[in-house]
Length: 60
Image (cartoon, rainbow, N blue to C red):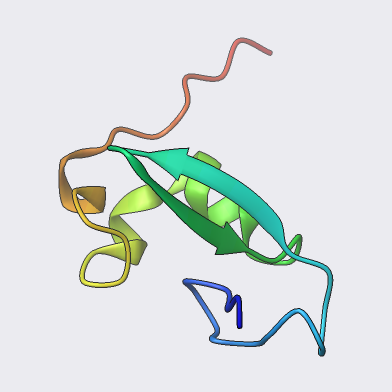
C-alpha cells in the first residue's frame, strides 16, 4: 500500500502523488507537497537523498 513519505497516511486516507526519484517511486500527499518543494531537507531519513536537495528558488 502506498504511503506519504511525510505523514505515513495511505491512499485510503488521502490522495497521493507519485514521485520518481533515483530509480524508485515514492508517494506524497498534497498537504506535504510544499515541503518537498520548499524545504526538502525536512524529509531526510524518509526520502533517500533529501538531505542533499535544495529548495526551489523563488522569483516573485
